[in-house]
Image (cartoon, rainbow, N blue to C red; front, side):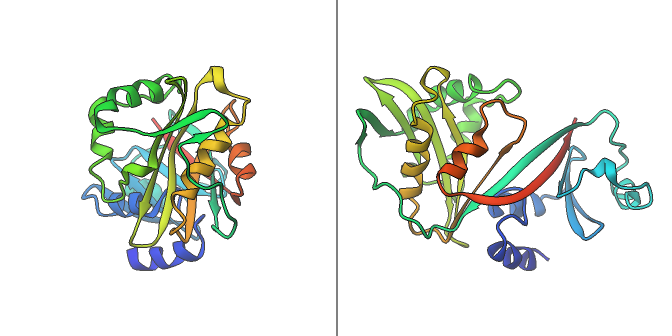
Length: 240
């Protein structure tokens, strides 16, 4: 089944809610369960997460959702609904060449010894997301890790933005994972510089994907569309 999913994904990068390597890892997890709802395959992991494309699960009738209950004894009561956009870039347009300085901003590769700074920057950027230094260091052990795709944007050594991307050599997929601009630096085009810089470092990719929460007051989807990303799929997640 996973090979069929991979083949479909390469044709339609919006057919999964996350980068393929993440889906494959979850699919192989011993606690993962895959069930059919309507015409979609839905993956459950640790009875905590449901991702479904295109429709709010609450819009389904009880009969359709029987497959969910037989796999996972939950009701949607008590679960938080999150809507996510999933966009992709076909890499047919050129991006700003990689360089160390853009508009007086410095672009620097994030070092392994800066894991704590990465953790702090990410945690200060979100209200409901929190990562640990151990998690940050673990990301660097993944097969898709590429140190050149972890970058800071600075001004006079003051950190303005963080960008982390990954590259899957198996299917030639790039993925934007963490794109954060400090609150004081927003509205200056730094986010676009950050995304374009990462894209220029993934020119070997056949496509690049990104996802994000729709109900986010920083409106990240607008940034990605300015940088040439496209797509119209909405994914629904239900988390405790």
